[in-house]
Length: 292
Image (tube, rainbow, N blue to C red; front, side):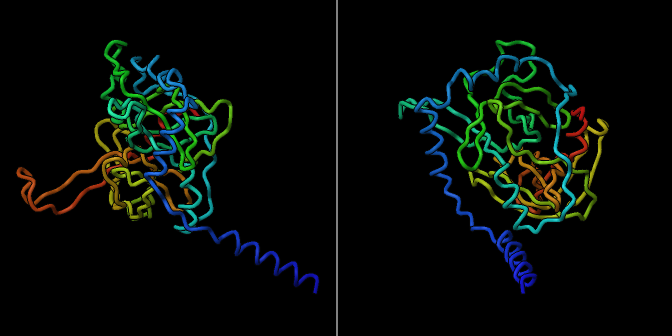
């Protein structure tokens, strides 16, 4: 009888562990809470602007050293994958002063995710390239744009620096200030084969934490070699999804969102849209910037 109770208790605990509350996302409320934190001085502008101290330095294809997580080996259901990884996906946000409102406002800019517990994050280089990244001249850096990171719960992180990037691969590694605290990071996986399942969590057009699934359609490589690899997938995303993580079925990073290419029957006049190619950067290109 005692052994039966133990079995029942273990069975119940397993069932309960797989039952997760439904997540209802209120994008407006999320931004309002973040704006309140910025305007009440909980985040200092000097910390936000520290990013630009070394922003002009040429760090293209510079290899850096930090510790990443071991890849997961257990398959996850699509529901568990979202529940487990969604808290680790961050919003990449712009902070600006509104002349009309007389206070700081926040605008959604893209997606970012941590690949180490001490605050190394991955984004696309095109998300910050237009601000004068690696220009070599501090005067060419646009410091009027203020950038922060925030998770789903509204925990804000400022960015200390861009530590490495690859303009060929369209990836950048930034170092966030975690104030000495460890954060949850997402493990890096391996490149996937055509036909493999993929899962993306992104913020298209301010639709925060949009979950999309699909398959790897093709893997390609150009004259840049490993930094010129692309992973074309059928999972859906749009503007604002830049920097979003693409997962394998175990919740490991398989790649990062990069761009979309629209194919029209009349390409010159952009009439009669036929299909949209979703182009991502595979994890092998990411790993090539890291001395792990």
